[in-house]
Length: 122
Length: 108
Image (cartoon, rainbow over the protein chains, first blue to last red):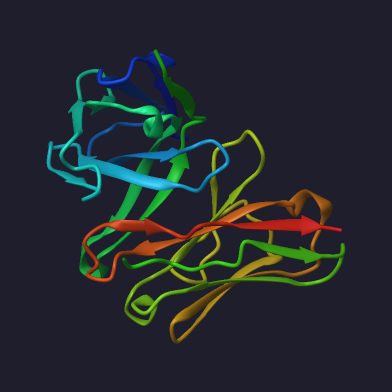
């Protein structure tokens, strides 16, 4: 059974770059899409972007200018970088496996990691 | 901007049926998904492709679609079903995933 675990700093200073890694265990990162999703405290879910194991990506247009998602198949990991952060980027960040049916143009997320809280503050 | 619209809250008594809706213009053309999120936990998929139930999800969870509205139905609600529920589909042009604002289900 695939499990995902987020890791990275819990505190980032304003204007700096947030960096997180998701480690996939119990299965290979190959042949799937992988995603980052965030949830500000007390608010709803926001999709950030996803990456295919081969490296192709798709980002939320509202974050696209600041987001980079990369994959390291040798380590069974994928990563998120979000630049020029502000307090509005404070959130629980989740990684998740994407189930994608190209013919139907549809995606869903299962399973999810437990999430990691990142606070942006000086 | 395009949104998936959910009611902020729904309340039901134990044993009753809870219905949570999600509305958007493009839903007739796109599949919808439902996630359950309990406090302090990650979301869990409870319905996929409008009405399919993942293994391990109780049969009391079901999904349906009619026009621009999809509905998550929980029959015989139990106290453990109290949670936030999020619908998910895609943006109006089908180019990226999109979540609804979430509905807090309270079991009275």
